[in-house]
Length: 358
Image 1 (cartoon, helix red, strand yellow):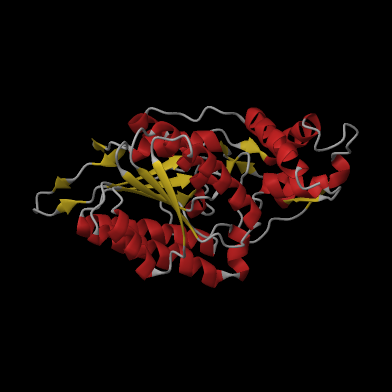
Image 2: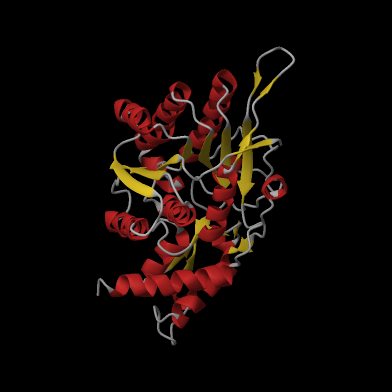
């Protein structure tokens, strides 16, 4: 797809969902790379998981900001507050918007559907409306591999039909893609959606399996392994995700006029995934080994005694597998970090982070 080069230096960049997991790492990357301009972090700092972790990430951002040539500000607010969103756009006039904020988690959506509608649909609508009335060079937003639902065909391609979500979370992410496409078409907003595949790494989300399992194992508990371990996931390390987003920000879909005299939607969707689905049991074994190596678990730890194989849970799928060929072609990048290296870095971070609370 034809791209328009987007210069980041000297620009104001709004990153929603920072200091969330991906958002914080992206903002740190931007502050390290930019020689001028401003990065705005926007987040509600809600208590979906321990706010201390978001405060920790925000502290990392602020430390980098002290020596960055670019400015950084943090705005605490709710995406559903349309007036606040409009104020942010009117005051700071962001040229690039990276919308990562969302209510995440498949299981949580089963019992708390209203939170997903407010954040993922109403919140994204407010961002789109702001982009409509305040021209931006590029809107990059987070989607999810969850949109593929129970697709039998693998690897998952962005050309596949994704009309049968198996969770409300997935339905809201598909809705975001549809909303973005319509705004791109109607108002000529260059937009790129990114379907992330199981992102993991240091200071990640505690509700993700590798993190919650570590918390359980560290307390000598037993982890539940769903579908009796017959699961495969396309795990993607955080640094690879950030590299992908950073490249995408600099290449907006090109504005073009069609034969009918109307804009051809400057719109694109990409998968970003490791491209190598890993068996869940193998992943768990490597996680446990690295937790032992990092000193989180004792060397005599009984791995098998702390595993319970259980049936599939509602809203889950047996496999995720990214076809990232289009992304790799357009942005000349392939995720590089394997699960052994990635889980080793997580285990070392976990040991250090939680040592401060003991």
